[in-house]
Image 1 (cartoon, rainbow, N blue to C red):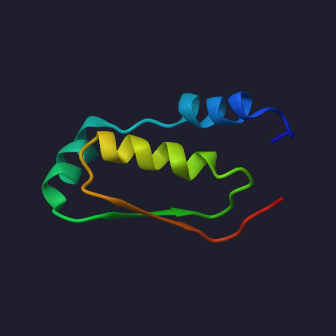
Image 2 (cartoon, rainbow, N blue to C red):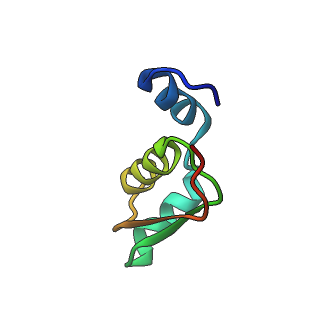
Length: 71
């Protein structure tokens, strides 16, 4: 991703990520946090947006784990 302003960096994950209805039911009944694994992060927006979507879908909590950071 090019080095652009924060508004453009956060827009891409918002447009690309969704939580389907079936996992939403599972998230609500899991009774614990979700481990969110991202293989590479350059801005941190993708795991942040994904965690927000998972919390809104019913996850009790989200533990993000980024395997590599670029930049």
